[in-house]
Image: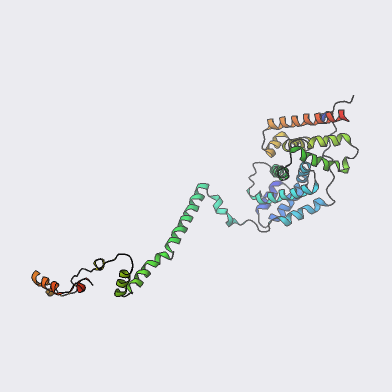
Amino acid sequence: MNTPFRLDEHRRRPQPPLSLPPDRYFEQLPTRIMQRVPTAAPSPLAGGWLTALSAPLRTALASAAVLGGFAAAFLLSPGATVQPLATASLAQVPRAELVQYLLASEQRVTLADLAELPGAAQNAPTGTLQASPEELQELLDAQSAEEAYL
Amino acid sequence: MEDQEILAKFRDPAARNVAFNQLVRKYQSKVYWHVRKMVVDHDDADDLTQDVFIKVWNHLENFRQDASLFTWIYRIATNECLSFLGSKRRKFFLPLNDVGAELTAKIEADESLAGDEVELKLQKAILRLPDKQRLVFNLRYYDEMPYEQMAEVTGTSVGALKASYHHAAKKIEQYINDHAQND
């Protein structure tokens, strides 16, 4: 009967009996590794001062940068300048054309909607306003409806 | 050259490549054989050894010297080996024993074992161990590494490592004795 195998009694080899690597392998390995190493040294700007900050501070800084970016984009967006241009171009359209457009459209715009209340011109001389109610009524009655509303 | 000297030179951008070359020359053999014992095949060990040193280069600037440089490099090498064996198993949907069988076939083809039946059985038994247990066995049996240092390399407690080595040794003896009776 064979003696049971015991690891303690087995002659221990310094290495498992594997074949040796090729000749001069360890002479060439450093060169091969150095060829794979990134040539550029890590840039101190790539995270030097950022890594020195604490994580919450870095998060706050990143959030502020994102919000600042949004704010700048909003203020500089073309939409902010469109409104004055639109108002200016609308003022250049002749009044009669606007009235025709609104009456022709199907928006149920009536003459009453477009009426302008007759008012005194701001630069009119004050003397012309010294009229009695009767005189004013006579002037209004003398005007046609079209002249009063358009 | 001492590790501290290498690290100091590495921090100097002008001397960085020279320092790293010295580091590779100092530890390449230990890393290679540590890896080779785990993956058996020379080409796999060659690839992994290079990957280990590339990782060392990428992270050496952040090395905080909580452990010795040698222990830190060993830990990187260990993780690379375990990842390699795990990914190999997942890639080919292999159970544990099939990877062991593949490694055993490689070691049987190795001419250096020709004629040494007991040693061949010992190697077969070692290769049947789970990866992490095999790692513990190699570190203790071949490298004779102290348990405290093994704990730093593997991130496992000393007690767990002692138990793991004891179980590994019992499994190996059992395997060899069972196969001796069958011969």
